[in-house]
Length: 125
Image (cartoon, rainbow, N blue to C red):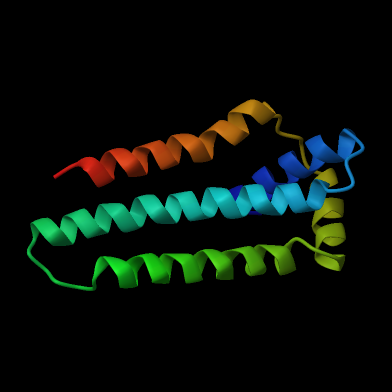
């Protein structure tokens, strides 16, 4: 299991224990949000790096369009990966392993910290 699987199941279990019908939807949104914020940090880093190296790769508009398309792809990938039978099989496998407990507030803080890092990198020259 990857770290994203572990984080998904932690968020899923938290909201499932709260008797929330939308636990899977919230967990898929969380994982997509986390992955897209990490992708944004990488994109900003390489954008600034290529700019300093004087390499013209693509325009800003095309880069943001590509980012939006990749985020949509990530959402649908996560939706299919963590839905239906696959979710039940992965959850059953995970129940046999030791549970890792992360505070839910900290889990929701991580993507926002990564976004903050992306904006700091975006402001750098």
